[in-house]
Structures are given as structure tokens and as C-alpha cells.
Amino acid sequence: MPVAEILQVAAGGLLMGLIYALVAAGLSLIFGLMDVVNFAHGELMMLAMYAVFAIWQLTGADPLLLLPVVAVLLFGLGMAIYRGLIARALSVQFNRGMVQIFVTFGLAIFIRGAAQFVWGGEFRSVTGHWLADRSLNLGGVFLPLPQVAASLVCLAAFAGLLMVSRTEFGKALEATREDRDAVALIGIDRDRIFAMGWGLGAGAVGIAGVMLAGFYYVGPNVGASFAVIAYVTVALGGFGSMLGALVAGVLIGEVEAFTAALWEPSLKQVGVFAVYLLVLTFRPRGLFGKM
Amino acid sequence: MLTMQDVAASYRGLKALQGISLEVGRGEIVAVVGANGAGKSTLLKAIAGQVATEGTILFDGASLAGVPPHMIARRGVGLVPEGRKLFPRLTVEDNLRLGAYAKRGDPNRFAPLELVFQLFPRLAERLSQRAETLSGGEQQMLAIGRALMTQPRLLMLDEPSQGIMPKLVDDILAAVSRIRDLGVTVLLVEQRLVEALEIADRAYVLQTGRIVMQGAAKDIAADGAVRRAYLGM
Image (cartoon, rainbow over all chains, first blue to last red; front, top):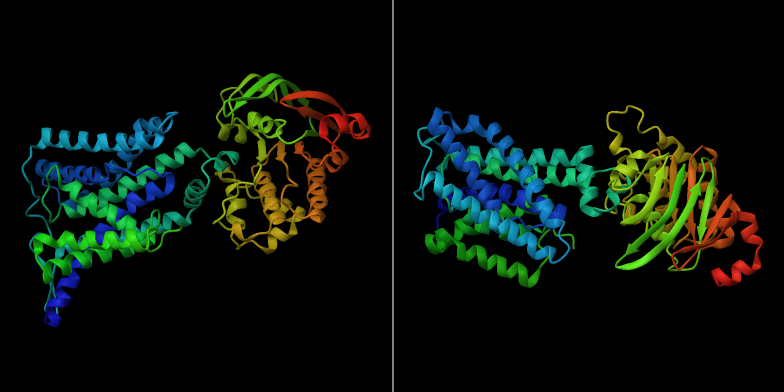
């Protein structure tokens, strides 16, 4: 493989990996905060993509301009899901673990069905926007602009999450994650913190979805394929670790890109899942996991 | 300040408290003593809203029934729980400052820091250390400090002497005494009978979930029969 081609594959892996990282960060944030795996995480991303598609179709607005709008929408949706479903599911007396799995899994199926009902099963795409079909040529390495923009926005979102973690609210979030009962002793409403956590997690995956819609097809099942990669990313990075999600997302992006380039594009996920099996066998807590 | 009338509570399916009637007046140190498993911790948890109760619990005349735990804390009931329940990976400073989290918007909310450092100068030396790296005694100081940051009017302490070096026990209890002198009412649960009764004004003796004796702390301390019968000493 010539150097130029290696660089090209690596760049592609990096751009995709940063998106994987942000999707995983949202999942990891919620899991780390309250030990709930959100099986509807991919569907939240899918909703963000459809939101972009629908508003674009209606108004012709550029996806990049829709970023703040959809991010706020998803933040609100995440909070609503916590208040309406998760808080209730967590208040059951028996089999709490099972209940929360079925609730988020059921939500995923519901959202997927609803999307199919509203927008149909066919693939859609957002075309003709500002960055579409433009690319950057870095000494022979070819970088499509929509993906460059997506990865930069994802990095910025990571920086945003990091800044939030340094605020007083971020400390309260960390305290709630460490001892959800003790925070009540100092007057902190953990339900509010949990709801904010869901808002942030959904907002993060929403941002990834908006940027993805600039160059990726939109369909009812698009979330599922990204969610599977997100679970692998979170496991590799370590449950609950933001830095882990970032490093693991990029790693997964690279593994996928090189599997596709060296072997066979249709088998790109084989490399990803091989990594997953290795992690589970040799380091079940992941690269940056605390437990 | 705190009134309990005929309070019952179950903990993990077992009746842990029955017919508890208890009074804590403003500015008092009231001790609740009793053997292991007598229900002392459950009593504090009942007041803090952490276990379901029947009966009446009034704080400053207002019922605490159905009030969620974080709102009870905001009303001015501080609890230093059994096992301290610090945030282990956060620093000493973050643990303390979070005590004032619910008072965001109040510019003076960090004012009690000064008092905390006066009571426990060691905490001031360890501000940037993670809570989990502190010794048992220092962790207890931090737990009390964190509770003081919420500016409680009633401070409840659950076995503050547990798991700390004997020579620090006196320091901690002396600090509790000073906290009362600063105007905070104290409800103290302790297994160390002698030390607790030394600083308390009044005391209740708890046995298998019931109050079996109450009175001035010095009378209870002097009553040899009480000590043998109810406290196994």
C-alpha cells in the first residue's frame, strides 16, 4: 500500500471516528451517570437526521444552520424521555434492570416505526447544501468537506462537554454519578441532574446526527448501525469515560477504514467486532474504564 | 425545633422503629444511644426522608411527611451519614463547595467555608486532594464540613466516631460541641456512650426500635442499671 493511500485511508477513518466518538460520548454519559444503557440512542441520532431532512425539505435551510436548533430539540427530547419514561421505569420495585432495558429497547422500536410511518422506508438524502460535493486536497489526500465539518463540530462538542464537566453543574453531575443517594443530603435533586444528563446525551448524539445528515443517507434503520458501533466504542473506551469515548471512537474509525481498504469494504465491521471481542477478553473494563 | 410523635418505620421489610416520640429543642445537643441494631441509623434516615415512615415528624412546625430528601436538606436538616458518603473522586474543595450547590444565586453561599476551616484546619491543607485519599478521621471532618456548607439549622450525625483513631474521636466530638455553640442544633447518634453523653444535654436510649429511656444526659450516664440493661456495658 503506497503512503498516499495509507494517509487517505487514515484520514477517512479519523473523520468517521470522530463522529463515532461523539455518538458514543452521549451513550457513555448516560450510562456512566445512572447505569442505564440507552438502546434508543441510535434512534435519537436518526431523529436528528430526519429533523434536518424535514426542515431542509420544507425551507431549504442549510444543515449547518440547523445545528443549534436540532441540538436544542434533542436536548429537550432527552429530558422528556427521562421524565416520561426512564424515571418511571427506575421507580419499579422488581427487576429494575430488565425494565430499563425493555423500556429503551421498546422506545427504539417505536421511534423506528414512527419514522417509517412518517417518512417511509426509503433512503433520503440532504443534497445541494453549502458544503455538498466540495472537498479539500491536502497534498494528495482528499477530504470531503461535509465530513471535515462534521468531525470539527464533533471535536467542538467534545470540548463543550469537557467545559461543562468543569462547571459547578459538572461537579454535581460527577457527584451524582459517584453517589446518587448522597447528593440528596446536600439538597441536590438527582432527578433534575439525571434529566439534564439525558438532555446532554441526546444533544450530543443529535449534533452528530445533524452533521452526519450532510453526507450520509437518512433512513429508519440508520441509527441502529451507528448504535452498534457506539456500544463497541463505549466498551472499548471504558463505560462512563469521555476521554475513552474519544480515543476509542477514533480507533474504531481507523480499524473500520483499514479493514475495508485492506480486505473488503463489505466486511469492514468484522474488524470492528474483532476489536470488541479482544477488548472483552483481555480488558473488559475498556481502555479508560474505572472499574 | 424537631418533634416526632408516634413514628414507625420499616427498613428492608423489618419494623425498625415503633412508637418513637422525641423532641429536639433549639440549641440543644440531643444524643440517641443504644446497641447495634437498635434502630439509631433508621431514626436519622426517617427524619432525612430516606425511609418511609408513619406518624408525625415536624421540623420548625412544618410536617416532613412526603417531602423528598433533597427538599428536607434544603429546609435546613443536615445529615452526616453512616459511612460518610463523600464523593470519593472529587477533591476536598469540590466536596465542600457542592454542599452549597443548592444555594446557587446566593452570593454568600461559600461563607461557611471559613467556619469549616476553623473547625478542621486539616481540610484547608488538603483542598486539592481527592476525598478518597484522606484518612478516616479526615473523611469524617470533610463529611461534617460538607453538611455545614448547606447551612443547616439541625445537624444530625450518625456515628461520627466510627472507624477513626481513638485520639481523633475527642477532636470530632469537641467540634460538634463548638458547632452547637455557633447556633446549630445537634442530634447525635453514637455507640460510644460515655463520650456522647459528655457533650449532650439530653439523651434517648433506643432498644429494638423503641425509646426505653430518656432524660438529662448526665443522669443517664450515671445510671449504672441503664448501662447494663440497655447498652450491654
